[in-house]
Image 1: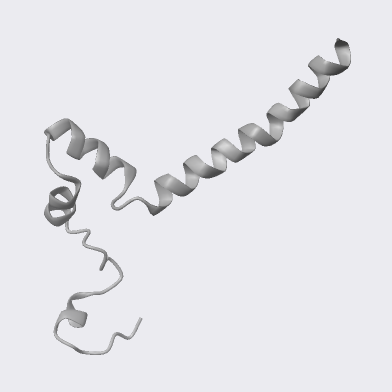
Image 2: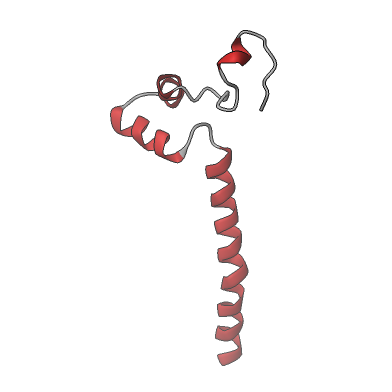
Amino acid sequence: MTSYILRRLLLMIPTLFGVLLVNFAIIQFAPGGPVEQIIAQVRGVDADAAGRISGSTGRETAGPSAASGAASRY
């Protein structure tokens, strides 16, 4: 019985690590930041609309010169 409990306790470590990894991946690959999503839920706004309002349309690294077609120095 002791070996069973010990084995189950040791199997919890990779299981928790896997759950943390999946959770991290979902948060990182979700559109918008986690804070923007929470604000959108509180305000009752769609996440895409919140992204448009905050200006995070996926072009955060592109400066104003990228819209005019000029090459960026950065």
